[in-house]
Length: 158
Image (tube, rainbow, N blue to C red; front, side, top):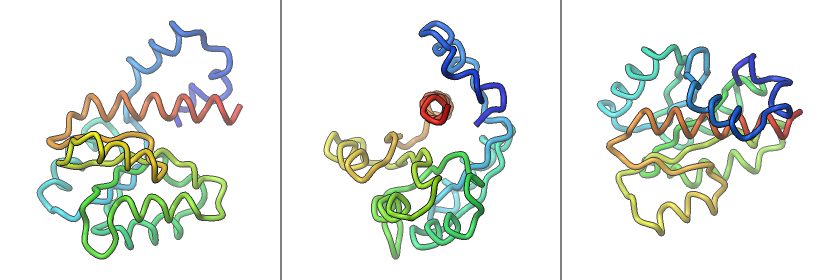
């Protein structure tokens, strides 16, 4: 979470929240990217790293859960999770992360999928994801969704 938001979240009115989300950047965020497709992963990492994010990649759901578990609490700010991956789907990995006995198991997790059907988006929410991003990914939308989720998380932690 951006340092400037810590402690200030509870003091924000609606206009200030909207402005904070509009001005939100990925600079300094640590993001776990779970994506089995090399091309998709390379594009995502390049775009978000240009904005200052630090990314680590998992190639499937099992690896994503393992990396999250092995990382110190609050080591990641958010997770971008492809839905259709080998070994363990993004939905299964998200549900597994939510069940962990860790203070940061409520980390913002966003589904990324070529499937933009209402049922897919609904299922993403049912397994505890914070949003569903359709491919091809609009990274302005990723930034907006992360900003909203991190602001909301910051308000609940204050």
